[in-house]
Image (cartoon, rainbow, N blue to C red; front, top):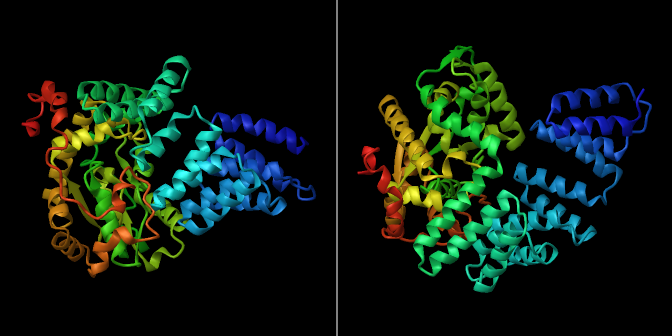
Length: 483
């Protein structure tokens, strides 16, 4: 029989190729047949990597905790445990384990950046800044760290730093993701200097590098958003439709729409009024289950029993006692899956957030949204939005009592009245706490809005994006809604 080191070496090659199931079977088979053998830390850590790749957090955590039991002073294990606690929503333990990791190795860049991001998402900006500055000391050529810090401190990126970053981008072979962050920083600097043409040029380059940073995945998902799901959203076939499920008794809230449309604000307003509502954030549960099944154009079948089982598993991993909570999900693309969601959750309701569409287009293009393949060019943004309008119109007619529309302009201008109507629609009890969301110490926001959400609500800026209207001139005759 092969020894542990040889098994780990062979399995590591499978992990590199993302053949996680094959790797899992080999490792578990070795465990089964080696009960008298002392299993080492590296073996358990490899199992953690496999189950993490399989997106099975319970098993991933189980094997990582075995590593921790063998060696509680392994700074890499501590950092990864912190990541798991954070996914579980255990902020206190995540912070504790990041700090332990850094105390054991004070130059461990990954844990330092992770802790900086955690503090940033919690709104503890001075602490976040401290760790970002430490990260820059350790890795002064990592442009992404400058980008993150610039979002906390508007004055951090000076002309001197712009010159330094520009030289880095010209003279060093930076990967696409780093180049993308660099061009977003150059664009913001150009905007501050009111050089809007240069800003737009940099934004185009930033988005192009962002798309290329995950080229194959982005091509695949862009094809899905443009050519597959637009043909299927109103034409699903269902299997095991009449089987009863506990999920039918739930009344989850789904926030849908476009990025940068006020969805995070609505999420925070809903979760600030009561401790009984838990947000899963942008979980993409339905997209994760459905999109994988639809690589072929002729496949419209959805097995509802399989969907139910996967949702139970995901809920169980994300919320310890989910049956006693109201669940909110802010996966904005769920407007494509409204038919499926209502089959699973007949009592579900949908909050559709929207704003002035031109402002929304420019806000998307100006933001670094590297995980959304359709956001990296004006042409693709407009194509996606055109589909979004058609899909929402279809479902508003089909389920007029299920979808509540909230316009960002109205929400910011009359927050109390609109939030009361929102709570009434969701069947929740409104209180003054809703309006004091920015005072929350436990508010964890990981979206692009995580800085501005810390402030009290400001009136909508109607002229913020006037300088970008030329970006649309070649498309005015193509989309009626642009006129």
